[in-house]
Length: 207
Image (cartoon, rainbow, N blue to C red; front, top):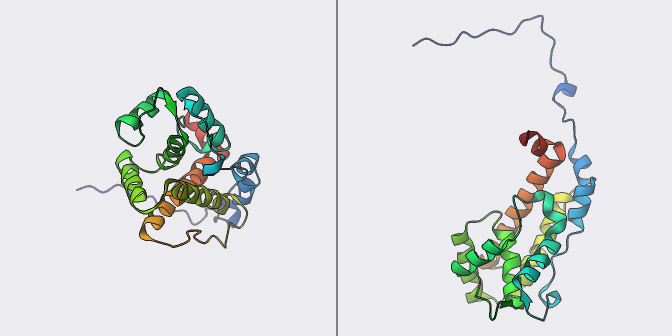
């Protein structure tokens, strides 16, 4: 077997300095950027803030897009489309609309799906929902996701992070830890995708 010829480094070559390996864009530059500031302003509506009147699918999609607008640069693809809604109904992640109208609980479910689908498969999301149904009321589980999501994003997108980021569950359980892990994974991915976009890698990959 013939091995490739190894060319030794020249003794006359210049040494590598600390400046050569220093990043051109520091993390603090990113968290001070307009993108990061938009993400820090993100508010996941609580259950009692969701519409009390039923909405048509197009209205639901518009609401979802408005909620996640500060995170658009961290998402891979659209947050929600008509075909996605139909697929979630077929997969039993979402109950079918009544007279083409969606209520508060269905809207809450769609908002959570939009978060989880960034990091989990449909079957894994279905498992989480089954666990939630057995252990927590819908509004309690939803508000827990909302609170933990906002805190996870602050942890990743603020200078120094959130050192006091403790679990807000009234009683920490295996179920709450699973949900918190999914939220943490979403925030970590959002940070990675956002940082790469900030550095210009997203634009470079499109050329």
